[in-house]
Amino acid sequence: MSETAAIQGNPEGVEGLVEDWASDKQTYNVPWGKAMMWIFLVSDTFIFTCFLTGYLNVRLTTTEPWPLQTEIFALTLFGQSIPLVLIAIMTFILITSSGSMALAVNFGYRRDKQKTFWLMVITAVLGASFVGMQAFEWTKLIVDEGIRPWGNPYGAAQFGSVFFMVTGFHGLHVTGGVIYLLIVANKVRKGHYDKKGYEIVEIAGLYWHFVDLVWVFIFAFFYLL
Amino acid sequence: MSSEAGQQHPLGIYYKIWILLFVLSGFSYAVDYYHVEGGLRWFLVITFMFLKAGFITAIFMHVVWERLALVLTILVPPVALLFLIGFMTVEGNYTEGTRYQYRGDDPTLMPLSPSDIHGGGHGEEAAH
Image 1 (spheres, rainbow over the protein chains, first blue to last red):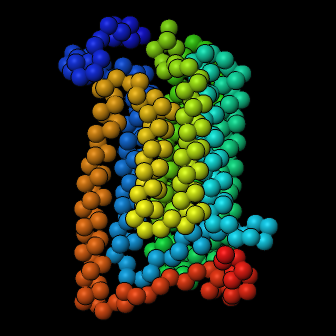
Image 2: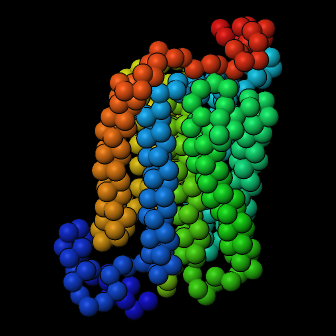
Image 3: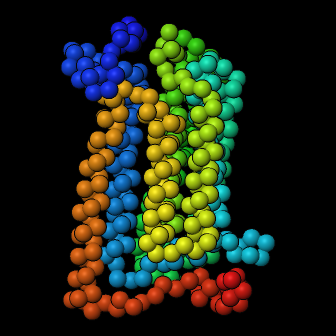
């Protein structure tokens, strides 16, 4: 904490960058847990981008026609086929959960345990409902549409492989995030961070926003383009 | 003490960004709903995607308020990924070309849609 106080006088911008790296001291002016979470998220960015680049490559190279995503993901509601409606709902749910998480972080720093706890629980519930809808979507694709990782009736077999791999990996991240959030929320409620400080809520929030961030790219590349 | 070092900002900015993300998602969805096709579709979808990604990273993940040392640690390594994407695009196009050229694959094949598989009936009505 004394480092933080010392750093207050540091210059901003490029001068501050040089200062942070030059002196024989801790480079990043953040709790170590936050720095480590960022390192993890950068590495996770590489994993997801490699998956998406693999998707790009198989989609470009295959000479089989690529299945029409908008039609495959359409859902019949009230006797009308609406394109992408489930995906749109899932997208809005994830954004809502990102917003509630941002508020939880804010109330954490205000040391409002009640609000932080409930906002994190809301975030986790929204995340769990996202996973539930994804399970529904997968069931529909596998059972009704006959899409398998090794082939499908509509076009290139690679569609199933990359779709299930990337959305499955993202779904695992959401599931892990829900568990993580519930653990941290419970510790907030019990007051475990009263002494340590509430950075841990922000760190959990970083992970959750990252999951939302990955969905932004999946939404664009798998469903819209 | 430690809480003062953390990221504390007025609530208003979160609400504003939250609404903005909803609006941008709505726009992306509208691109599909109104059947915008071709180059414009790609341009719009990718623009909205990067705007959303930017706002989430900058505001929700607090990157704009971090010191430059951390910001560069986060943003510089992924630049390598842009090279990967670029190289794989070139490579992918080349591979596809050779498959058409030397293997004689048919470039005119069209994908089937669910209504082709499940029989016309309700599918015809659903299609506008």
